[in-house]
Image 1 (cartoon, rainbow, N blue to C red):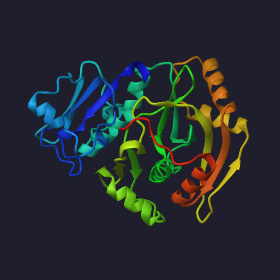
Image 2 (cartoon, rainbow, N blue to C red):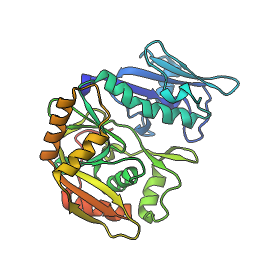
Image 3 (tube, rainbow, N blue to C red):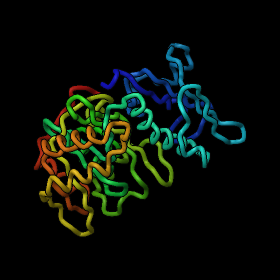
Image 4 (tube, rainbow, N blue to C red):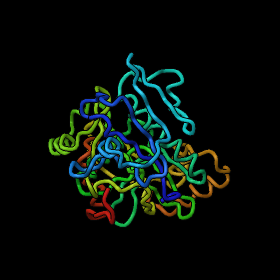
Length: 308
């Protein structure tokens, strides 16, 4: 685990399903071992109850306050507010959750400046990590949910840190976030899987609360064994084709946004990752078909050594 610590969002202070704010506050705490607050099971005591009872002793490093007039204010002496707030204030609790979600990765890089960080999804399949470096709207999150439904272990659906010692992918332990509306051609079984794990949602986004070993805990590391482009093509059957290492390296360079490392070091590390991985392009229409093909190619259903 990088530095053995990081952030915790105390989100149980509001009933996320209704997106109301009975306590008017979201606390953000550093120096804690998990980002997986949203993935806690109903049987576990909530952090909000611990906060109310006084048994939760960690000091919050930031607070988001909702005023009587409906504005959201950021209060912290050590953590900068999400950058979008400089130009546009959030207007709902879901806006706050999404903005904090997005800025977590910047905070992570500030605390872990030697890590690379890719715009990518990653899922542990068998003994290694299959990584999908892609831009927005490539289908990464939906594919991750489909793979979780097949008992594969999700590391991230959007950003994958790479540790500086072994170039392993690092799990972020954050709930998956799907764009709404969901794809019309989504498999009925997969749609039910998502419904059973529905988290905070609004018109534009839906969080999926993966359970137990469906999601890796924050800080878990696994070597990257495959790098796969995603190419969604309507009415196309799922097929996996090899691509050149040079094409994949170019994509990794574009998708890495950790620029605090010397360029030569970035290139050397990305080249090593590419050379050690199987590289391919996945063409697909339906996420379930793509997920089944990936499981056939890269490994049996796996179980995590830890629970979220």
